[in-house]
Length: 163
Image (tube, one colour):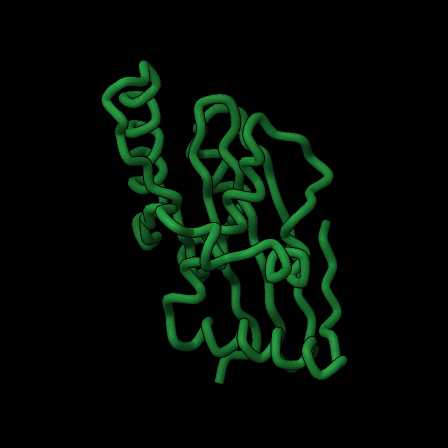
């Protein structure tokens, strides 16, 4: 059906915004993981990183639920809103329970657990996790992730490259 699928996750932040892009080629049985730690919540830098893919990729933004006690609530809500405005086809997802759904072994299998770029609060890992959560919620991308896991369990791993 689809030869190449692009999944992107964005974790907005005040210090860093993590952006992770997974390019999955089913015919070649490969996954390429690219990432960028954007200073602050610079939506232009996020758009530049995603390039032309930002309108064709499945893009998921980690939402933020204000906690009423933190002085960063307003800035975080603003960051999410600005990034969503800059990526109008993206879906905002709350991360409630995400660690129970998208676990470390899946992230390791897909090259999304460790990143060469340090960030303030594991922003790249959070961006990858929200991308995978979004993927699991859609039929086509859920099947694609399931194929990769199924092949792995059979001992027939896909080629995974993390940039």
